[in-house]
Image 1 (cartoon, one colour):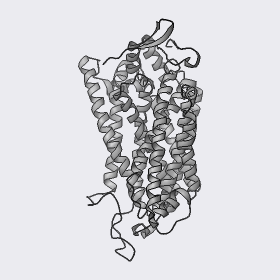
Image 2 (cartoon, rainbow, N blue to C red):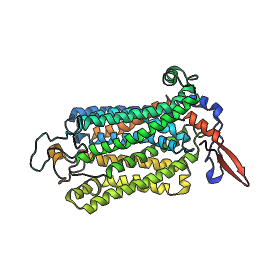
Image 3 (tube, rainbow, N blue to C red):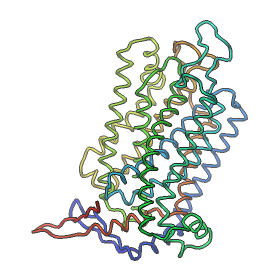
Image 4 (cartoon, one colour):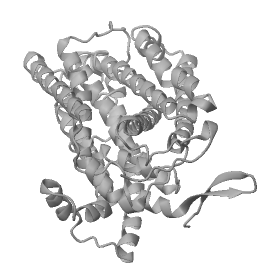
Length: 476
């Protein structure tokens, strides 16, 4: 077990920790192999939820088929929810690594492991390809309708939008897995000598040529930088594509350049929130208190607070643009998504994506704790679920049949409430994501060994005059 040396006094107690690098590999190996009862129970419960999600999907396919997108609104919502979290999480690790933040070392692997859940996103997206209506009007040009519905695909390249959307999601998944592999290679190379069974075979296959030479370290550093930059570019583009094709284009007359930005900001907010929740569970119940100090939560909470303020700013920009536009279609979109049809869902979205986490993160003593940022993270996850239900269920049911080719959005449909199969798919999608993440933690260490070990070389606890301070060295 690593030697726990928490430092700090009073409100800063436990803020910084100093793990023992000499026993870290052995300790992480034992934690990765361990199957404590709470973990086993969580794996079993999420596995049952995963199964219920499959049952709900099969039942929905039998009852409604894939001819209309309207019955699949809640499936779209839970796909988007999982997609936003799992696609944004690797970017969190990439961004904090770019800024050379010392406090981010314990959360890097936690964030990168969400890339494995990205495989679930790719599988869940395949049915959505068949549900998205064609760009061209199959009924022909009739009064009040368009020959081609409004989308981002102006020229209609071959395979658009279905094939291009699938390729984009696939590239995003592959890039995130490449970041995880390159980051975890030194750890797998180190752990392959003590691992047994499937883990040893996996580590030998994925890190067989890693020996930790200076050239390999330089190549890894450059590779992570290039993959991170590429991932950021493709992430923003795919968020723009998904939010446009599966939300805006399904509501006649909805034209908004701000909504894709809100979608990306919501993704970053939710992914950081999920990472903080996982870190708190690890620290509180997982035995990782010697590796995760409160400084990680304190620093990440400031970023979460900034993203939360950025979210409400763009929400205001979206609303005020349509409010002052005063066109009939703009007023109807506001009524439908904000103040009338889905007003309750919007209110929950506003409370848990902004008001509640802002109230929690506003106080310095709460931000300096471990539970405060994690609580705010849990809130933004629920708020993100409400966001996806409001947007994607509303979009899927806004214009059934050929009404999607109408020139304007004239009639407000009634809200669509979930039936039993919708509930199964929602809880099943969340359960599947958690189940796969938990299984991934038994394959790779939850702590990035090489980064945390590197951090131990740059920090120490020292005295200056009458005070005690953290002394932190900068390698570059």
